[in-house]
Length: 100
Figure (cartoon, helix red, strand yellow):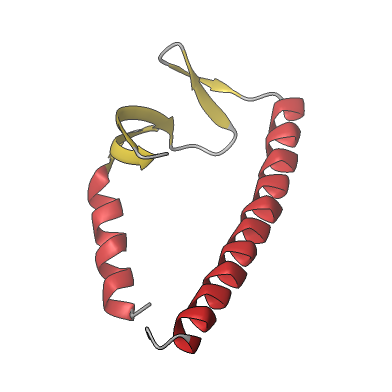
């Protein structure tokens, strides 16, 4: 990926998040092919938004989230590696029959 497209993507992401004191407003993002709009998130580490108010997460919740994020990272990396292998295999097949 080129540096220019990365910078453009970062600028768009920054324009999509509006900081409002200790809270951030995420305007629109795509998850699973669907567009989600206007979500408030905490701008302070260790805090989350519950029923519209900023509340401190318990240490157990922070630990569970950290473990879950680590597992998710490993899972994402493995899925990406599988997709890459499949892409390489299909491109090899295409090349062998003269399409690419």
